[in-house]
Image (cartoon, rainbow, N blue to C red; front, side):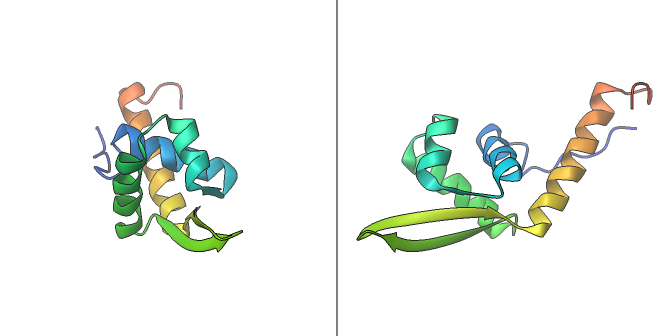
Length: 99
C-alpha cells in the first residue's frame, strides 16, 4: 500500500533544493543558499549527494573573475522527484481517496 520513499530526496534540504530546481530549471549556488537558509558547507554536501545520484548537474565556472556554481535538474532528477511526490501522496491518501 505504501510506496518506498527515495532516501536521497527524503532529506529536508535535498528536497528543498530539488523543489527549487524543478521550478526554475537551474540556479546559482548563492540563490539556493539564500532560499534554503542553509550554510554553505551543508548545502555543498547535499548538492554533491544529489549530483552523485544523477539528479542534478553542477557547472562550475567564473563570472567576472568570481567562481560561480550553477545547478541544473537532470531528466533523471525530474523523474525521481515525480516518483517521490507520487509515493508521498500514497501516505497522504492511504485508501486511494483524493487522487
